[in-house]
Image 1 (spheres, rainbow, N blue to C red):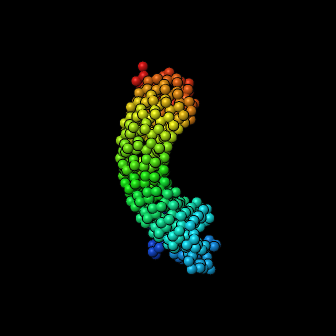
Image 2 (tube, rainbow, N blue to C red):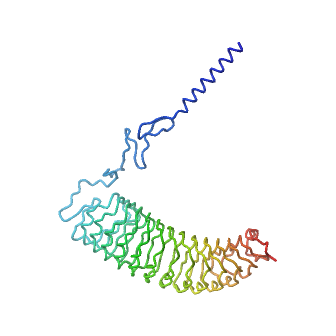
Image 3 (cartoon, helix red, strand yellow):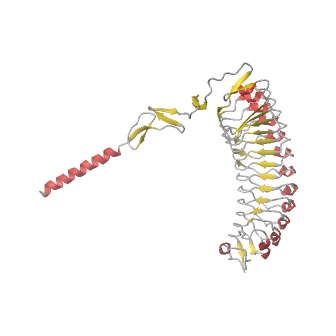
Length: 417
């Protein structure tokens, strides 16, 4: 009886192992199908639905599928001769001088027929529309345009070189908040009357073309939040009418061009979150109209120029997360309208200047993560930030009353007397 029980147990064990082995065998599915919980299943891309075993584009009411996208359904509209149909509307080729469609829920591509509206001076299709596909090359036919705004859509592909034919553009070229790829065409340098160029928040790559230095009438240049690489071209120094320059959140390398200090009309300078090296130009004090100076999150070295004290219009200085060395210049105490001073995570040395107490309008003072030494001047409590952050330095007691216990505890006092 005992032997029979043993044999039965072994048989049951072998059967169980065989069953487990069968369960472990991978399921082999036909092309296009995927094993999901032991069943071959059709997995469709985003926006497609499995209909009878095929991935199908299902459009909302009022839309139809056309060339694998959902577009507005207006099959009964026929335009008269001399007009073109764009998104269920007819536009007279000779008479239409402005086409402005804002926040209207337009869905579909920009049809090439738009290039027939040769008298257009303003073309704006932006703000919560859903324009997809590429910018048609026919846009280059609209040579009377003074404004082109296709921002805040889902445009893909590259910026067509034909855009360089729009030499009357003056009020602005806005292509921000799309999914444009490829490089910035050098032909953009032909737009010599342009005052605003805004290409931020795309996926543009490659170099900033030196031809951009031909746009001598630019007031604002925004190339931020792309994938641009290489150095900032020296020709940027030609843009002496610039009031705002934004190059942040790219992959730019090399140093900040020294001739950037010739942009004396500049109010805002944003070059954060790149891989910039070298030093802050010593002549930065020439930019006497500067209101915002953001150079943080780079690999900048050298000292903070003392000429920074001439920028008495400054509201915010962000130089954090670099490799800056030397002392905090005494002249920084001249910036009596400053709201924010962020110098954290550098390699700054020496003592905190007592002149920092002059900055009575500060909301933010951050000096943490440096190699500052000596005693903290009591004047630091006179500036506007009631809880300045100075942690992770080598500052010695006694500590002024406005310094937090956390910041006190984080000091390396091994070299203090």
